[in-house]
Image (cartoon, rainbow, N blue to C red; front, side, top):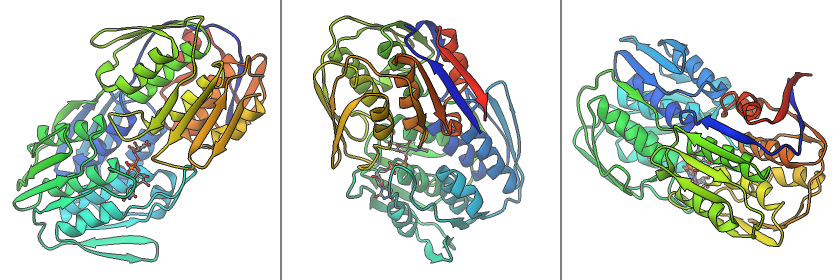
Length: 420
Ligand code: UD1
């Protein structure tokens, strides 16, 4: 198991490119199963979750090549219909095979994903959508077994008590593109990754309108075709890299990103006091001496993303004054906080709120990563901390950040990967 050793206190400075979006490419990879033949996906981040999804596709019968951020996915005329526990346990996003295999075969057996480090994560909305399309759903021995003779388009409301669902919207949309007639998904998630998958499906011949809005209209088609597509930039990786410059008092020119997907994060950085200049595909951030605390409400897009919450908790722990971060999507997503406390942060958790009292400095310490974004938050804190930090279990960060230590080293960070 690898760990990072980080010597903090270096002001990061330089230029980087953002990678492609992990959360877009995972369902896009699975969507290729809706047809037979070779699809080409570009701007794919070289991260462990993508490698894991390649294994899922290969298990189902596809042939996959991954070179220089491009995936070639050859889907045969016969594909499997089972997603075993081992795949889904290692990566929740494996559950996207449900939507695409229901669309392709009207049949899937997928292991239930269960909870994870950031809390309970039900899939009731996914199942509700599949049922609306005419699937018979059984839960047996930890598996969802969906069977459908004929998928029929339907109007449905997919929002749950916690708001819209990215996963359910994508999963149901992937099944609905092959349903007979019109499906209208109201209460659809509007995250850019949902739109990216919809655009990929349209490039395969699907007929989805209302993209970027909470009402998706899907006119079912009988046949889809392989496609060539380039994935959008990863707005969460981009935000994390901006914070790496911000938290160390440095500067960064981030290229190949999409600022249009990052309004909430960019506005908070400005509100704290960082200087930003924003181009069409690039963002320049520079630190400033006077920083002020802010309050953040984590909510579905276009509001502040839960996937940037942990990184901002690290950043705000060094901003003088009191900041309050309310997590309204995954209410228990504060696993990074006890580790930040060990580095000298002053943070109290009150139900779904982190109350952060800024400290003058953080001190390097051995810490443990618990999930993907929590590990990013710890890396950021360690970059700013005085002295050396050791971050264990960085396999979490490898799931979703392409060459993170190389990118940070390019900016001057003293970070090395060590095998334990
Ligand atoms: C996706 C992202 C994840 C991000 C999250 C929210 C991927 C691979 N993962 O996760 O990085 O943090 O969106 O932006 O893209 N819910 C239900 N019932 C359901 C489904 C969801 O109650 O059937 C709840 C969840 O528990 C959560 C909220 O709805 O409280 C939003 O979850 P959702 O948008 O579905 O997150 P994911 O798609 O799992």
